[in-house]
Each structure stands twice: as C-alpha cells, then as structure tokens.
Length: 210
Ligand SMILES: [Zn+2]
Image (cartoon, rainbow, N blue to C red; front, side, top):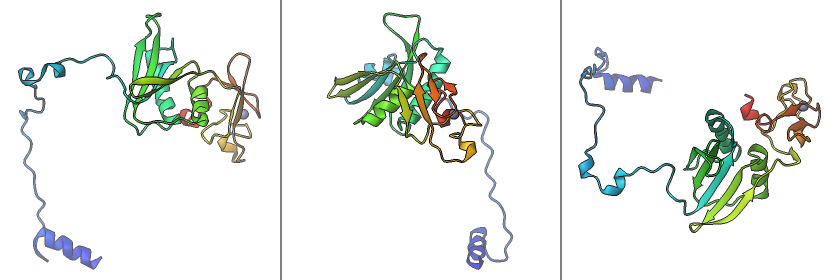
C-alpha cells in the first residue's frame, strides 16, 4: 500500500506537493468527425457493393432458416442458432433474404467462412434448433455436402436444453439435476419427457428462456 501511495505521489509531482488534475481542453464543437471519402481516388471494384457476401471458398452456409417468418423473428432466431452451434466467435454473418421461387417469403441465411468439420452431434443440434433449414459445407469453392434438416424424434444429453415448466423436475429451478429430455410430437413440437409440456423448437433452449 505504501509503495502505491509513493508512486501516486510521484505521478502527482512530489511527495507532499499539491495534486492538480490534468484538465483536458474541451473538444471543439466543429470537429469534423464524419469524413466523406473521395470516390474518385478509389479503384472501380471498391465502388460496387453487392447484396450479400462474396462467394465462400471454404466454410458453411445454413440456408432456408425460419422460412416464412417475419424478418425480425428470423434475425432473433439466427442469434440463437449461432450460439447453439458455437459459431458466435467466428467470422461471417447473418442475412435475411427472399427465395428465388417464393419471392414473398423471407428466410435467414448464416454464413461462416473458414474450415469446419461438423460432427453428428452438431448436425443433431442444428436439426433441433433450425428444422427445415439446409446446411451446405463448402470446400475449395464447391458445395461438398448438403443436408436438409428435419426435427429429430428425440433431443437430450445437451446441457443447454431446458423445460419451461417451472414445476417440472427437469426445470433448473427445481435443482434436481435432472437433464431435460424432449420427444417430437405428431404436430412437430417437442414434448418434455417428464411433464409432457409442449414446446416449439425455439423454446427448448435455456439461452432463449433466460
Ligand atoms: Zn418438463
């Protein structure tokens, strides 16, 4: 502690001296904080901005996400998909577009350029969080694998699943340490294996229910 006081005193000037805080000059109101870039100095290719992203040489693209939903709902759900698949820290982006055939329907697309090897576990999680989507794995500029994903018949053994019924033995509030289990119903929902409560595929993830 004494060392720190001495150091502070040294910074302030000298021991016993009066400490005067340094006053910064106020920034001038007219400061030019928005600078227009001179377009005439740029090469032609930098003047074109296309919708979407550059073609991906290697990586993964998840297409047809939540087709038919509102753009705000699609964006919201793509956040969850990225988090469930552990893709939040990678480069890439999310996009909302309309399909070629059904121009009136919106859909989400997640792009992740880079090197990816997806396990069966990843595919199962993606199927459960984005049923109806299409996963494309791209290598060397070509789609090498394409998967159409459907709601799996059962989903369990994942820490981030949670039943939303607070009275359920598997709900985190019950502190019973019972891991959540869901099975698919005939109307494509997930029913809790313990209390039977029905959930949509968007509702079974704890991060969604915080
Ligand atoms: Zn339950």
